[in-house]
Image 1 (cartoon, one colour):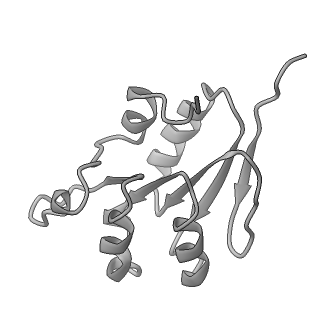
Image 2: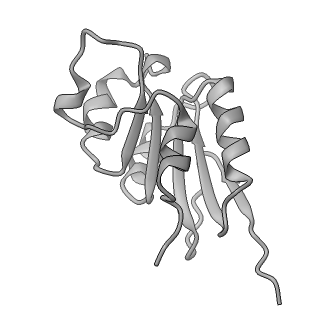
Length: 131
């Protein structure tokens, strides 16, 4: 019997509760989304993929609720202008990985999980494998 790997795409206002690993992508660029999709093909278990794009959604309550409950968060700080006031709160989670080109703002004082490519966080260590 084979285990079918599924990826459930979830956007506001929906939430899915099950045993799958849950990942929240916040304001990723099209390039980042493409890289994530390529890396996700190698996953060995099903994933609940929450997607928040501030240009398409404005449900901050949903974003806060989901961020507080997922296993991993990937945040593109440079694309997060409308939720700039939430960046420090999101970075406070140890399961947050972030992308930014800003060198003048010391985000690493809050969170050391800066990545330069979304696949760096996925491929470097198999974060989506549970023991």
